[in-house]
Each structure stands twice: as structure tokens, then as C-alpha cells.
Length: 306
Image 1 (cartoon, rainbow, N blue to C red):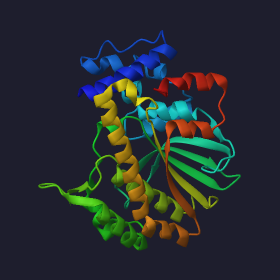
Image 2 (image 1 turned 90 degrees about the vertical axis):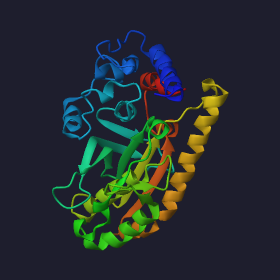
Image 3 (image 1 turned 180 degrees about the horizontal axis):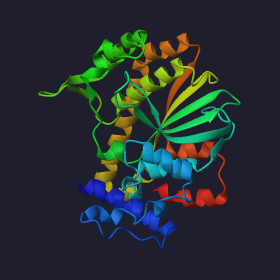
């Protein structure tokens, strides 16, 4: 692991310990990364997770409760800490319509025909009263530490699409996002260096398939939220690494808006269903400002402000 990664993880740990001074870290891991993993996943959460949500995470494909959620950099832990156990209330704002939204974690929706691996969306938030469904893809350090995912050939084959009319618009966008073919593999690289556009496209395809069924008939406004953890004071990293952080930040942001412009053919598909579909990119801080939280919750979530 690079020094850039280490210094960010150490900053996360320092702030975490300030908020949670008595939490034990995992001493059983052989890896040097043990210092950034708590002993029990519940030690990384704002409150104990209720049983229905535990079952949702256990059904997901990421084995989140086994070890991933013990990591201080865990996007799943951040998601739960931000959204909570029962429901989340959004105040009146211009980004997400205000109201009480019921939460389901690790929502699985199918991208391609039966037998294919479904998309796992980090959270689904539903407000039947105002007809709004919000799907969340949450990123913590992935955009800083990892490369964007690849696209498999199966997404370029019309035979694999659940709804044949969706192939042409999605194929057009997929091809606009492909940089080159990976030699020796049925996979393609992305044109982007930071933003994971292929993952977001798979999520959009899965949402489109679900909306085309009867499952979301009550919802005429669909929002896909890409919520990203960002540092508010990158200067604490020192000049070299703060410059690197800012480079990555502006790259991620510019790539998102470039991606959003490419989505027009797919947006039209939702319009044909009389559904208003929107994708938004928002920081953890700004997402939190939209929601109604208690003083205790806000104090705990200070662990993410660096």
C-alpha cells in the first residue's frame, strides 16, 4: 500500500478514535492493515444493526459483515451510519424531495437475463407518499485507492438484454465509455481514470429493468445517488499528497459530468416509461445536510470529517 493510502487511513483512524476512544482493533489479522480494522463490525457502526438489515447484507454478494464492514474505510459501514436503521427523513431541498424514506440495504436488481449476477445497490430508499425512489451507490476511499472496473463483453450482446429495446441506447453509451479491449480477456477498459462509469451503467440498467416491471409502478421519480466521501481539509496530508488528492478529486468530478452528458440516450428510455430518472453526484457532507439527524447522530458522524 502506498504512503498516500496510509496517510489517509491514519487520518481516518485518528478521527475515529477521537469519537470512539474505547474501541478495540483487530489484533488477529496478520496483515499490517489490521490497525485499520475494528474487532467487531458493530464497533464500526453508529448503533446496533436491526435483524432485517443484517439479513439484507448477508444476502448481498460482498460478504460485508464478514470483514469488510470492520474496515474504517468501509463504504458499507459509512452507508449504514449515514442512513440508519429504520428510515431516513430528508428535509425540503432541491436535490432529493423531502419526506420519510424506508431503507433496504444491498438491493439486488437484475441487469441481464436470468442466471446472470445481479447488481447490488448499496441502498434503496422509498417514499411512496411522494412517489420517489432513491437508489444509492456509496463510495468512501474506492475512488482514491482503486481503478474503475471493467466491462465484460456480455453487456455488448443484445441477446443478453431483458428488454430488447434497451440494448441500442445502452450499447451506444457503453461504447462511448470504452477505452480499449484487454488482451486475452473478454473485458474492456474505461476511458476514465477515477469515475467507475461501468458500475454505474450496470446499476442504471438494473434500475431500468426493475422500473419496466410492476415493482415500481408507484414511483414516477427515480434518483440514482452517487454519494462520495471527500476530505474537507486535504492540506493535512502535506503538500505532495494534498496536491495528489485534489488532482484525483477534480478528475473524479469532471469524469462524472462527462459521463452524465453521455447518458442522454438512456435517460430517454425512462421518459418513454413516463418516469423522471436523474443521476446525481453528491459528497457525504452535502448528503448529510439534506437529512434530519439528532445531535447524537451528528456528533458520531464527525468521524468522517477530515
